[in-house]
Each structure stands twice: as structure tokens, then as C-alpha cells.
Image (cartoon, rainbow, N blue to C red; front, top):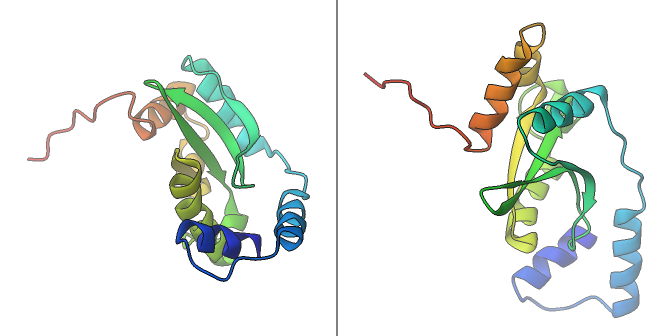
Length: 150
């Protein structure tokens, strides 16, 4: 219901929820304690190793918790570490809640949101750390892709 309320507020639609219900929905939405996985720990470690200062589990004004928040070229970017439970059947199609978060955070909280999907990160495991660091630099726009398209 909180996510519906965010959407209605963004669209300036009516009817608005009563204040007491808005507060109850927000409190229920933020009540779940985030869990940090080894996957997230690894991504955060690599973000640190490329010179960024990642903040973990940042509660945004919208009520969404961002896995990691970094500053890139003067702007805040949320990095979502998306493990298998963010996808249908542990595949590659995101769940509705993941899609909604990806839409609402940028439009409501005003930050860019990028995703590190588990299958892309898993391909980099076992390789040297430079590959994972390069992946994150590219994802965050810290390097240009110099490959020729010819």
C-alpha cells in the first residue's frame, strides 16, 4: 500500500490516504531489517577498491532501502546488488517489486539506480579482482567503452 501511495503522490492523484494510514504503511514498509549477503559484501569491497566511499543500506525518503549508495562525478548513484531472489524463478526476469523499485527510486528520490545482477557477477568470480573492478567502473560510467563497433 505504501508503494501505491508513492505512485499516487507522484502522479498527484486522488484520493489520498488518511495521514494515520500513510504513516502506518510507511512504518510497515521500512520495518523489515535488510540482510547483507556475501555477494553484496564483495561488491561493496570492490567499490571501495576503486576509490569510492560506499554507504550500505541507505534509507531513502521514499522508504526504499538502497543496497549501496556512492557518489560518482558529483551525483549520488544507488547500486542494487540483485541476487537470485530479485528475479522470477531465480532466472533473469526481475520480479514486479524489483521493477517497481527501479522505477520509483529515480523518480521519487532523484537518484540514478544501477543493478549488479547475480549472473553477471558470477561470471566474474574466480577471475582477478581487476575484472570485477572494471565491470563496476563501466557500470557507473567511470570509464568509456573503447571497443570498436565495426
